[in-house]
Image (cartoon, helix red, strand yellow):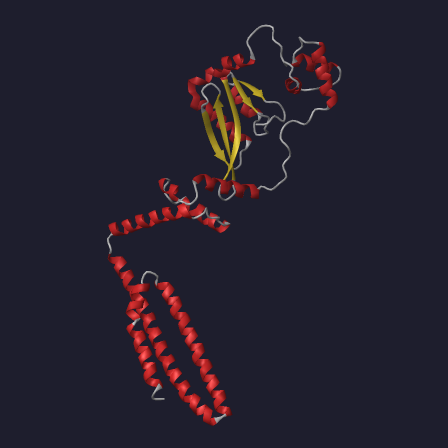
Length: 356
């Protein structure tokens, strides 16, 4: 018993003397030291408990051997108690060091903190050169997208994702939200019989244009849109409108571009997946786009009011326009067309099922 006690005391004293050196070496990462110390405490507790239990069982079997083991286990228990005390002292020291570091941080100037932030940012830049591109989860994407809006536009460049990536994440979210089955855009397919008849008329009558062919088909009881006849001839490599005189189609558009306007809707989805509709009008000559309004519920009355606002914005320039091109959307009612007809502008409709 007396021989065991000095050994335990010397071990505890040696560990107490090594406390400062250990903390000086591990001050850079105090949390790892905390984890290591906690592991040692648990290990010592298990060893002491197991030793005590073994001594109790041996003492029950043989009293002589139990007395001898009792002295040894008593020394081990006292040594373990001293080690636990040293570990507790080291843990208390770590807490005091961390608390002192926080106090020092509070007393530092803003300039020193800014310099440290710059150094940390440069370290991140160095690490990005060596680490592969990270894979962000949906939770990471939502967190970055939400907080990136609060940053100034210039600060968004330093993120691990670019603004284009944030827009792509939003587009993927919208794509997953609108999962309804969509039909193929464009006009329905033309029957092969009509296609063969159009090409036969064009080959037997080289001077006929696509409108003349559409009229002849109507006389035969086949009602086909002139635009469909034009598409069939164009795809087959036949001139849809052979002209003997006058300007070409490109020359006509250039000559009439000063007096042509076109209007249409386009939509955008917000971060909350709310669809907004924007009504815009473009001038063909200058490519100037007039964004008239944005709404989540475009009604016929709202669209007509936006047309009146456009007339007020144009002022005297309204007299220079002759045509307005629009599609066959139900939101463009007679009230909308009347606003332009009152100014002497002719409303021209696009072909049915024509893509926008």
